Length: 287
Image 1 (tube, rainbow, N blue to C red):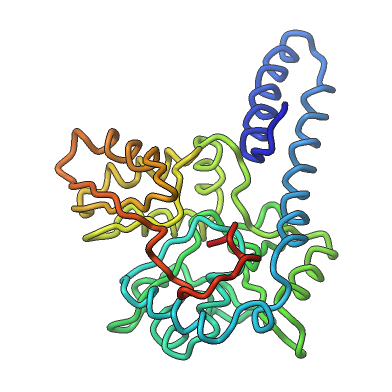
Image 2: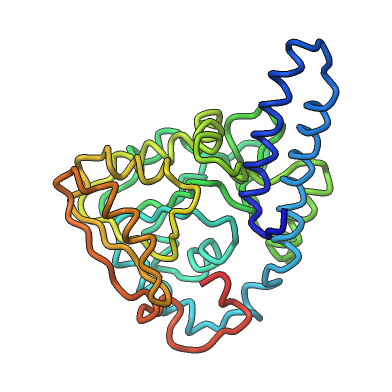
C-alpha cells in the first residue's frame, strides 16, 4: 500500500472484507473474508507488540523527576482530561506526582481478585475538587479477560517489576490491551459502544462542559470525536493546538463547528511545554 499509516491499512482491509463478505453471500463461499478477518486481528495484535518495542522502558530512568513536576502543573490546569493515546506517558505522569494521585482519578478502584476494575458510576462517586482522567481509545495498561468481556481491569506495578514488564507478561497469557485500533471512525465508534468502559468515557466526553483544549490531536480518522464536540451544547469554546504551523486540525474543527455557536481558536502547541523545556529526544514522537 506504500504507507506506514496503521489506521489506513486497517481501514482498507476492513472495506475489502465487507465487499468480499457481500460477494460470498451470493457465492456461498466463506473463505477469503475469514482470512481477511484473521489478518486484521493479527495486525491489531502486532500494534501492541510494536508500541511496546519502541516504548520507553522505565518511567524513572527515561523521564527525569523535574519533567513529571512540570507535567503535573500542566495537567492541573484542567478539570477533566481525555486521552486518545495508547502509550503509558500520561499514566506515568499521573502515578509519579502526589497531587495528581490525590486529585486526579481514573475510576479503577473496584478490587476483584487483586485486580482493579472500572467503576461505571465513577464520576458520580468523585469527591469535591477531584478531577477525572479517561482514555477514550483505551490504553496499553488496560486489559480485558476475554474478547467478550465488557469491563476492563488496570495493570499495576507489583513485586518491584516495571509496568511494561507486567503488560508484556499479561500479553504472553494471550490477552491484548484494550486499544481502539480500527481505522475508520464508524468502526472505532462501534468498538467503543461494545465496551462499557469506553462507552462510559465517550459519554463523559460528550457531556463535558466549558472550554475544550486539544493538544497533539490531528483529528485524522476521528470524526466521532469531532461529532461529540459538535453535538455537545455544553462546550462553549474550543482551542486547537497547532504543531509546526500545520493548520489542518484547526480548519477541520472550525469548518465542522461553523454552524454552531461555539468559538474556535488555535494556539501554537510548540510553545506549550507540558514536560518542561528540557529536551527529551527519545520522546519527541509521544509529546
